Length: 112
Image (cartoon, rainbow, N blue to C red; front, top):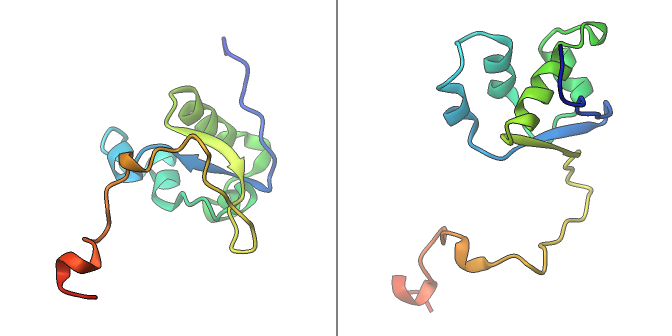
C-alpha cells in the first residue's frame, strides 16, 4: 500500500537525474527495469519515448513506479523536456565557484 502521494507527470515531460546514472546503477540489479531505465535516461527523451524504448504498456504503470521511486529518494525530478529549440537561463542564485573548470584558462596554456 502506497503511503505517499504518487508523482504526477505528463507524457511530454521527462526525468532529470540528480546523480550520475552509472552511480545509481551500481546499487540496482542488472537488467531490471530500473537498471534499463537508467541506461537510457536522458533529459531529451519524453516519458512517452521511454515507454516505447522500454517496450512498456502505459496501463501497467511500471514507468510510473520507477519515476515515483527515483523522485521519492531525491535521485531525480520531473521537468519539462529539454530541447534544442528551448531557451534556458541560469538562476541568479547560482554560484559559479561550485563548478569545476573544464579547461584551464587560455593564458595558462600559452594561448593569447
